Length: 519
Picture 1 (tube, rainbow, N blue to C red):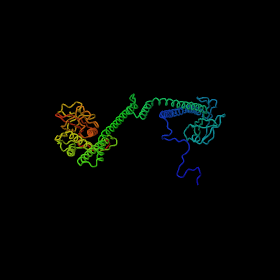
Picture 2 (picture 1 turned 180 degrees about the vertical axis):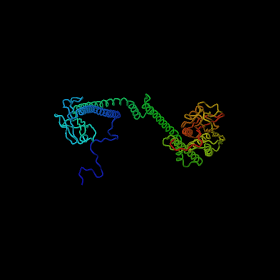
Picture 3 (picture 1 turned 45 degrees about the vertical axis):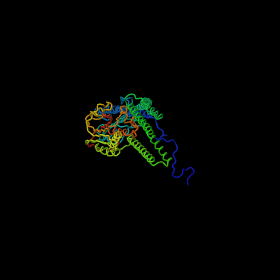
Picture 4 (picture 1 turned 135 degrees about the vertical axis):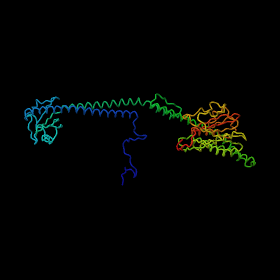
């Protein structure tokens, strides 16, 4: 049976009283308090150690003075014994004063069998221990020791005093113990005061040192409450906290840019999906409301529906591809040496089936780059598909893969290329002597307007002449992202006589070592 107050079986009752944990409702000290306590503990440890050293050194010096007085008095008695040749050389107490204080030095002579051979008449008999008898018998060495005679603490010296005798000398050290007690009291008070002062100074110093941390905390809390990532934290100085603030500013800027890009992507995707979805819905409603439609009209409507569904599918696939490349932190890919010429051949077979009225002319040299084969294949396919889409029926698309040193102009034969569209030598961090793989795709369509050149690699951007051409405006954006991930660069330029050329430059990696890791 259990009492009424007992908990049910299997349930453990929490002990009463306040608990200190490390969770959200736990008792936790602030950083300033912890710094002050750590400083106080450090000072307390230093003060305690210093006080102990001072106490030990002072006690050693005082006891050493007493020991020196005992040795001096013993040497005088030894000289007197040598001169008189008798044991009656023990001086009375009133003539046996030590140099330290007024405490007398008392002495007695003990034989090897424990008998007291001589001592002053007014002094008490000193204790005789086995070690004293060993010294008298010649078996022991002289030594100092502490003892108690009556109730008084004394310092004792035992030394041989001729053959078969030992000399015992004592000096009371009550005044030394009193001095050491006063010194201990002073050290304790001083140590306590030092700890309190250290605690106060530690709190003040911690407050000053943590002031930049409080500013960072307030700024972070402000960003968390307002969701405004465009705020900037004030940076002053060049210490670790200043570098932390600069790093936070960089992080906030990256987050702000990522958030704005995400919102823009959602807005652009919504805009691009609105038109085909509206058209798709209209056609479905027409099919539903006109079941007796002419076969030719029905066939045309179904063809339009299939084309619209295909456009939506391509748009969604491009969006998924962009989102996959945006999430670089979770991607784990395998890089390997890739022959661009092989990728071009595979892409030509695929794009040629989709654009049977366009002719393709390709030339390539064996040129390898280190990268993700699937991504590079997608990049080449998008470039060829874009060129074929803009080529007139019967037009020709030229594709070439070549090698050239870093720093060479993108196309020395095209003086009409704007300077802003040319690559000025190797990119950031690229060695000046590095060779590059150059992929060039040219078409002979209407070309790219000058005002469109800076934007053709933006997401969903479509020039004024591109509204009637099928597409989502994401193909070249995907190309730009893939090339950027592979450490290359890309630019577009007009072709003399009409058309456009897109030039891709990638690092040349002949026989590079495969690597697996996040990109």
